[in-house]
Length: 151
Image 1 (cartoon, helix red, strand yellow):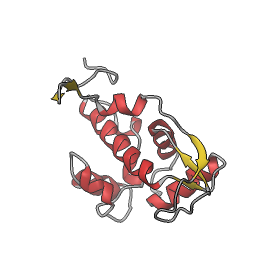
Image 2 (tube, rainbow, N blue to C red):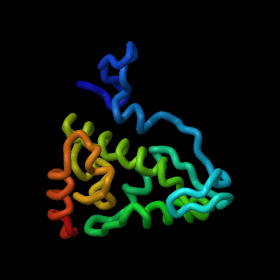
Image 3 (cartoon, rainbow, N blue to C red):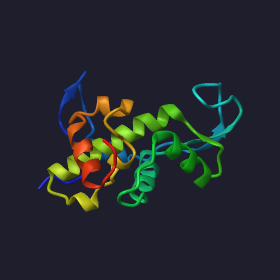
């Protein structure tokens, strides 16, 4: 059986690519730092959380079934939880994809739906990150419908 920490051996420019679960579990440099420049809704100098993928995954797992949270609300809640004013909008986009793709890998390995991060409570059919997912929006729409959330 393939383990979550196994590396997917695809070649890209001579290197093997990490699986999404490997990326999820890679310790990252995180913490609260002054925002280096104004971007999106973040103002230069604000205390900004740069989360790890695991922190994003853990937070998403805390969202109850039948409850949705948009990306902006997720960023705000994560920032508050970690003593910051804002969460990096770029990093959150990367990590939302990592969380979703890792969960899908786990499902494909036979893990129960209730044991993966319910990323569909944050991503919907129109969220920009959804368009980047390898498996498309249909799975997200189906899970949101199952929980009584708008597609």
